[in-house]
Amino acid sequence: MKLAVFGTLATTFIFGLRHFPAFYLLCLLTSVPRYLYGALSGRSLEDQLATPATWGDDLLTAVEVVLAGLVTAVMVWTLIRDQSGERWTVIPAFRDVFEHLPMIFGVGGCVALISMLFSVMFDLAIALAPLAIIVPALLIAVLALVFAVVLPCAAVSESGILECFAESAALTAGSRLRILMLYVLVSIPLVIVSFLALVILQPDARTGLPAEWAFLGMAALNVFLFATPVAIHNALAEPDSGGVLVETAAVFD
Image (cartoon, rainbow, N blue to C red; front, side, top):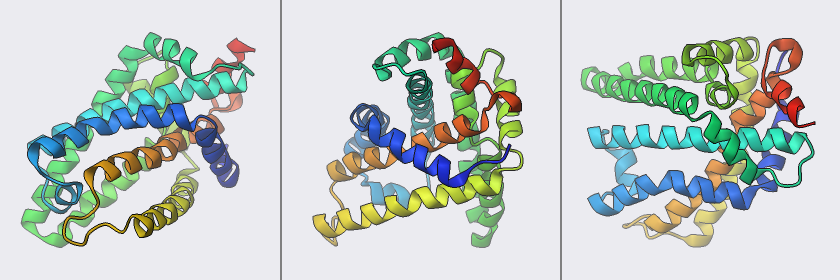
């Protein structure tokens, strides 16, 4: 089945807002490593984004990916419990995540290794020719669409790591342009809110945005960015398409 873009968009924001306090705290935890890294190294977020990635940056990104996988898994099981009509959903979701930790860490680790590989490819491309970065950029964009729901798949999977990647590819087939459109639509209000926040905060032109504000603001944006693949997976994993999310939710009915 093809993705219903606007329905999934509504699910993303309604779901994210409904559990925003809990999800925000979880997303803060995923931002802690980068915040501590910046504080200890003296590199601001702007410096980290503007300069070539070091091995420390790559390892930090890998840690963030694994942590993002854990938060995504909590969101997946929270949505399952939401759909089953339970009153308390976030805290019980931790128990479900704990039961699937090996798969979540396995898939998250694979995604982290792929991220590090592409970081090396970007560095090599820049060293060869600036325009050469188009090749890894296009490749990672395609892979991101094909495996857009691999982390949610890992949260509920009873099979293996490769099967999670295969399931993501099967679920997203026929909907990848719609997934791209959905991310664009999700990003629009987030960019607008970020711009308004910068106008209100008025960061110093020399020092940029204080690290604390960047730390707090990034976690708020991540709530909805992490909720997006969860909503996509929920929309695509229907019983007749071989998905597992809705089928698993039936256990709680």
